[in-house]
Figure: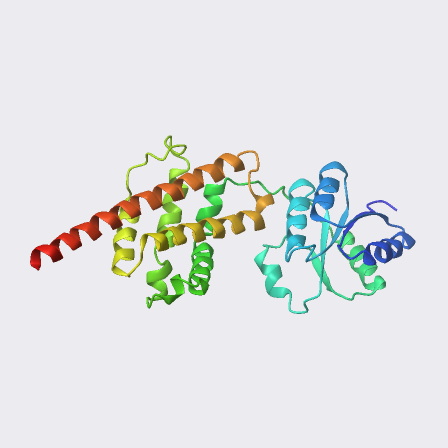
Length: 281
């Protein structure tokens, strides 16, 4: 039969034996992969008509990485996710329609075969997903970055002790991230010599008023780095990987510049306040 090449991806050794065997008995040509790296190697070297991938391959959500790779490199491939979570509809919406359908484990072999044939019969041509630069992704994800930072700040053993509101904790994030994203495309992006921004200055003053220390300022920056790293890892294959190294360097320099300016303002204002107190005394 035509259009019968299947890539099956699952880290369960027994499923990598039984599922391909069932598919082969129904006329499909199957290659099995047990890791994301193996799956990506297959996607970039061989054509496939159907991808059947577990949602969690080693790490939670790794199946989305495999699907994203397939959608970008082989846009006409049918993508099916296997998941152990029945309430999966909300997760499907989050990946913007990259998955054609899903089955909840344990799925019967006949169910999978019928679903594949149904989707192959209704397959339509798609546009190739165009990779984006990191600066664009940061602008798109700025509110999610804020929420993720807020969650990490509130669970941090030091930062969580400060009695401040959610807005005071992370309200500055969208402005700073957008500012860094803009700087990443400027001629000075590969330097730390960017002039102090109004946002960084206001952040330094706000953190001083909130009872921060300089080490807490550094924790904020470390959390921002970690959150953006997670965003990049989860959406790696939607990014322009040919420029990703330099984009990550520019983002890191932007965070360092923000930290340096805010610390300077923090220290200058702390000294000024201290001098005023001494004079008043």
